[in-house]
Image (tube, rainbow, N blue to C red; front, side, top):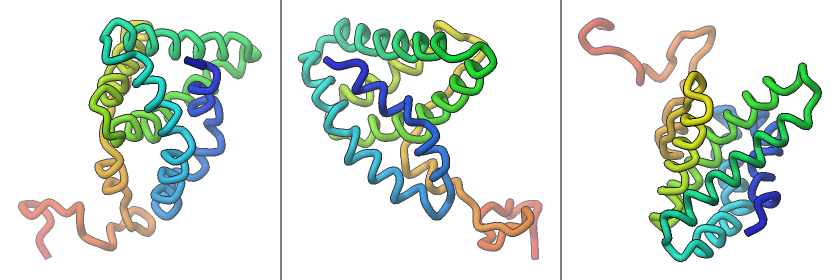
Length: 157
């Protein structure tokens, strides 16, 4: 298990965050899955379905992320943590949930829990790619042009 290679999926945050838009996200997510999906699938297979090994993998990943923040200059640490958390939420967790091995989904949950245990005031939630993708709105100046987000009880024509 090469934790450094696995963490590249999060450390390259700027590349992926800049593509988190309504138009670019589907292609960016596909490229992210093609690049990092096989790496994570292999890492999960290497645990042989053992929950303790999977938990150790999630702890090792969070340890490596935290060590990376400590190498940053003091004033950059918080920004790096925020960016990497966004990649965890928008790319890594949905990718793990999309992979066919159910243990990959378990790893996504364990990563989330490991993060919550270490930083209880800074937790995050995980969801699927489809839910995130459907959350983008086609709006101009806040006006929903597709009318998908109207409340039928309140927003009558």
